[in-house]
Image 1 (cartoon, rainbow, N blue to C red):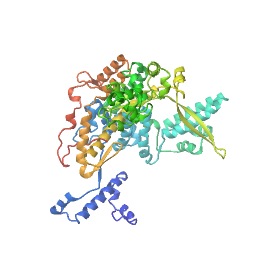
Image 2 (cartoon, one colour):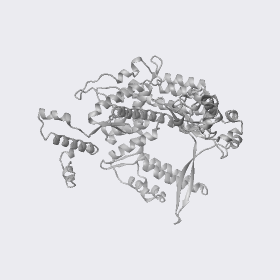
Image 3 (cartoon, rainbow, N blue to C red):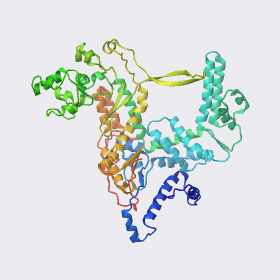
Length: 610
């Protein structure tokens, strides 16, 4: 392999050792083989005890991955401090590598209901593991039963399709045919109601054929003359003789069993996603910007007078400020003309200027962070337009948004992530090329309100408001929150590498470091995990929502519920899966940072994120 000659490829692939390696593992096998050959060359083939001591001077380029799967579950375990979930997803050291997916697969395989179904399928436990992972991954993020069943189908269809005399019919194939029938029925809807009804009845019959895996028969096939030829082939396959036919209903049953066992093992997973979704929806429906604890006047002045990022506009206040401190007229001699911008870099030359500060902190003496922005741009206005309208007073009284379209989430870093949920509608645009052919594009267009008289007065270009999409917030908020926390762990790993001069790399949430530094990197990851336990992100998120106008009654309701179901765990008060939480059920920093034996000969270890 090191010679890199094209003629050697066949020799490598024909080696009997290769036949013993699973195809998906060959890449890793070849990489380790190359490294072993390099080590052999470094030692000149001499493996005596004295020669092996030279290995301390061997410099490897091999990177190892710190990846033990179940990262979605790990982040939820850290967020909710749930020890049960932490143990099932390798957040804490365990006697063997724990994979939540494998536990669910084993429970499903041993379930009497699956054993009966498996008389037809002939699957083994290893086959179920990949399907379990596919289902669990989307379940962590709030996906519904249909998505879970499709993921199970994707993994198992290939395995089952290899069996002799077996036909596997997937939901994807079924839905393509059903969609074609629906499209044809829609065409007749306008001018031939009877035919449209007949097509709808035909669609129901075809659906039953797929779900039961039965022969469609000549009569049904004749009625489906309009189908695309490739689509019709799928139905024709079902008319042949097979030893067994696997249908979408079979995959749906497997997915249902797996979902049940997943919820049995760690009930908090579903509670987390559902709770966060309902919280986001309630926030959009009830939080009032006018009740928010923001100093809107300061926000308005900052919008007019600038900030450190884009420079400060010289205003009467700023000119007077410099005049008072540097002497009358000095600001003019320095070139500070009203309306111009001055960079933060220039202002730092003056001793009284606060580095990294803001104009409002210096001139207005406001340092409370309650005036922060929320992600939306409230004030896309030019200064002279406001001055004609008595500046801030009118702005403060009329320009407040009536409702939020952003939902805040406070992540492990303490940073506020703005999640924007606005309604969109689909617009179909047809295009005709020079050959006369039509093509169709579907665009997602933001839904807007109509223009108000005030917006028409103050904004020369006209402004309309976004409309919040509560359905999108309910399904996406928890998912995005989890990914945000995942990203914090990834960022902290790279920051550790930079601070300790250790090259790092990540692919999503798999962590890479040089082989010689992986133990060091693994220890750093354990410390990162332990540190994020200091932040009660769900409580901080609720507090942030309260400061933005969430009614106190709604805040109290969700806080009490979060405690009751263990998302904000309180031993003696929280119940998870109906069981009262004890102090021993709480994940603590010392659980993650527990001392581990050195070296690789002990079985007891920490497997990390992934």
